[in-house]
Image (cartoon, rainbow, N blue to C red; front, side):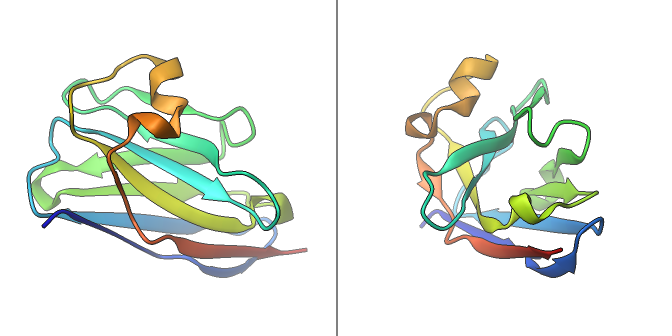
Length: 129
């Protein structure tokens, strides 16, 4: 059974940092593109970041570029999202997602949530002003 479990969310002051983790189980995700998405109250889910399998390419939403960093530990089947200089507008539930039905490498493909096959339950990030 494939599972993605996020952790690391919480309450932080503006300017602070958090590191989210997404532990994958049930199969190897070494070649899978892994994405991070978020959904704020009353808003649609939006792309945040992605890291491809094999090549390890990374892509970011313009709103987080330079502040967030996606990485992965293949041995642990885990991906991370390091979030720095957090802003109140970063407040949202953050979701990890995995693409397993074939590789995708382009930025456009990685930003589309329909291209992902598995999703975690989400972790809440709240940034206070």
